[in-house]
Image (cartoon, rainbow over all chains, first blue to last red; front, side):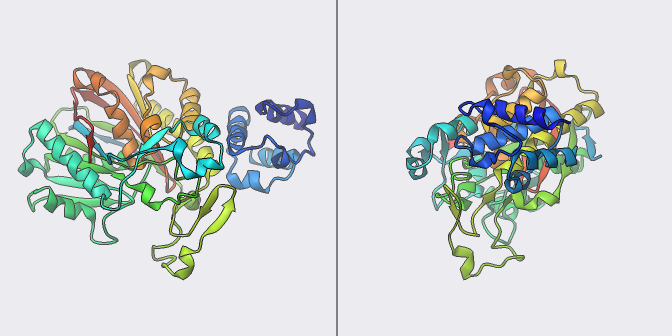
Length: 76
Length: 350
């Protein structure tokens, strides 16, 4: 599992936010486009691409994309 | 692995009853401040039925049962067991199934059971009524399933109130020697008990004054502890993993072929989740009917209600069906059954 690929996969879910703005240090829940639907899209992406089930708490307790990446890695 | 196989039972008929009051989601108070188009894209729920104060789940199931018995030409004395599956019973006690035995005019020699279950309730209920009938000691049973779940939702909670709808159903099952019967996969995971929960009002958290204190959880989510709380992310994650897994386990355990399966009836959770499940299983759209648009997520009633949406296909021919329920508990399960000339009653409105 690779962090940069995770960031890229994450960025692809967003429609309005430019892909270049996503970094491992990005506080994803602060992005203006972030919504409950996008949260579900993240869960779906992680299920499809990494075969990992994220919980609501996994997303709520992650501040940055790297935090979320580490949770996925741990669960894999 | 919890696989069950009950031969010698057959599904004979299905009926449903909904309150006549239609609630258009776009006109709800909460969508004056929240984005309706986003909600619609996620859930697919345009409108639903809502029961007034004077309508209980048992009323919806009562009218469903009366109509179904008439359409089947079954006598009241033919019924040997009734199972009522709901999370919105008439009373904390006694069991609503006993009240329905009397109200429907059934004989005293009837086995009546209440089951507390939601989105997987029709599957669980069907497995239990099949177990009762399969030996042939009891011949005919009614599975009465539904909820008036909107009574438990806060109108200021965008995660529950716009999503759910009220409905009650009746399913008729008969002992039939030599019939292939039903095959099940059932499972549960109590670690997710608080993903869908009404925290207060049982005996763990007895009702107190604080139960009625309204709390703001996030934008568009205000409720008290006597009302339904749902962690949408947890439920989504759970459904996406467990529903396809259960269907796959059922099919591989019992050697059921996709090519020979005519329809897949899923609990109607929300459009986004159900489409993820459909795509994960690689099912074509024609094989997966929906009732979300007009009825919302109707809890345990969703599978029989969705069966009725394809009544034209089921009334005159034989179809191979897989149904899958998943949700509150957490609890989930799937069933495979052959439906032959199903009696489908016209939708009742009260």
